[in-house]
Image (cartoon, rainbow, N blue to C red; front, side):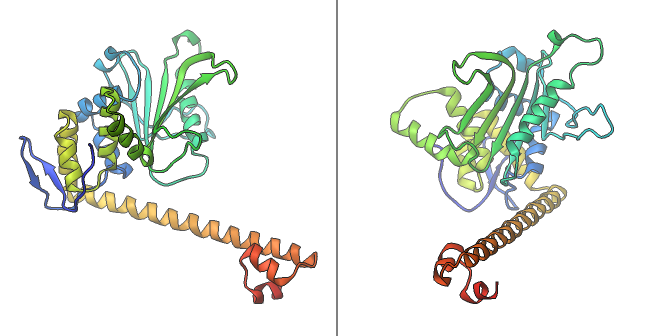
Length: 304
């Protein structure tokens, strides 16, 4: 329904025609490109359409949306600075944070919760009343599975009682959108034939963020005018040498960080295996049994 395959890349012109791009398409999962699309005030209509299918706010809230400073307010010199990908204020001053997370990083749940709490806690100045606080919403798009106890690609979290499910307050809301679970949702729609316009539109947006080739872009662009406009902007960004340099620099930084984490995990595992082997040797376990448990070679085990 939503996916096809291919290798060439294209972009939309200002008309309905689609022409071949001169350069390889830059991926929206790169946070630099993501922010250039969704945090550009010129693309407010694109952002408005995306937000409207993720967050259940009254439609009039999106009549006015403002891209605001992504740096969260700091009150003390030693307070940790929070920098959001896309920071938005709606008509009634509700705040929305939209994040893209490609690499698995430690404590991502705590970071997102911390950002939401900071958006809430920094709203008021001395003398202002708590009743004046506005709703804060965090939307995090993930290129890996974070939520292990749910097969849904879109999960919404608020402050509930764990036993009765009674809502304490909806002033803070966190949405997770997991790209790896998209295919399962698409298959479910194709199998059941059920029609949910909002769900299908959200799948279109996430499919665009996930897209990497020409046929995907072409197919998605025919489904909706806002998706089509986003494809046009993405094509224009992909043709810019300056943007491409920023993109490649960011991709290199991500690869370097992934390599660093891999080496750290590997070294930690090796150290753990060595400690286990030492303990097993001290307790008289056979060399073969230690090898099976730790994966260390016989010569390494004998040298301990």
